[in-house]
Amino acid sequence: MSDARRIRVIKSVVAVTAFVGVLALTVHYMIGRVPLPQREKLTDCTSNRLVFPMVVRYDDPYAFILGLPHPFGQALSFDGEITLRQDTRVVAKIPISSKSITPCNWLLTAHNMEGQILTWGRTNQGERLDDLLMRGQTYEVDIAFTEAPPTNSSLWLSSIASHKDL
Image 1 (spheres, helix red, strand yellow):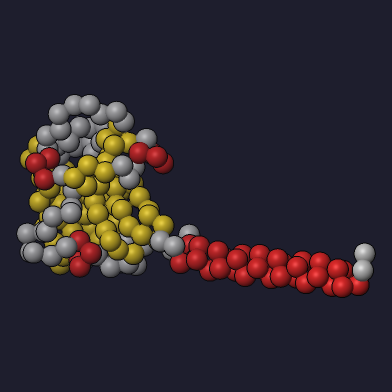
Image 2 (image 1 turned 135 degrees about the horizontal axis):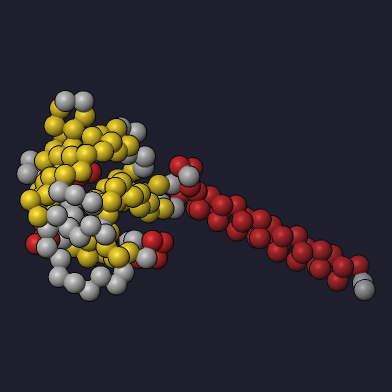
């Protein structure tokens, strides 16, 4: 092999190696910036009244989701209200109902559950859940159903995390 050809091969190898290195750094940088949806199970819907603490671990957008066994295949009927408190202060009262849910597939892949978004509408105070919850804060969640969802359902919080959060 001639010296000129050897130099061209070495330059090609260096160029390809540099390209692969820049590509790897770009992918590493982008992966750290890609938001990752999170679905955290809060409680099972076992009665007409559920009270529990909730820590908001990730960023908005936030949504409460009703999880149902897959395939559910039944008529769904429930009605109630979620009250969020910090200490003794009421942060929000959010009416929830089977008449105002939005189906989603957010729980299907990882948890084999059908999801129904409960809180995409506004609260009774005209605020969105994203305006009410803050990452790192703890809330007392008090759910009172006048008509409860099926006892094999569960309540989930949907949020967004970055790779550094996990």
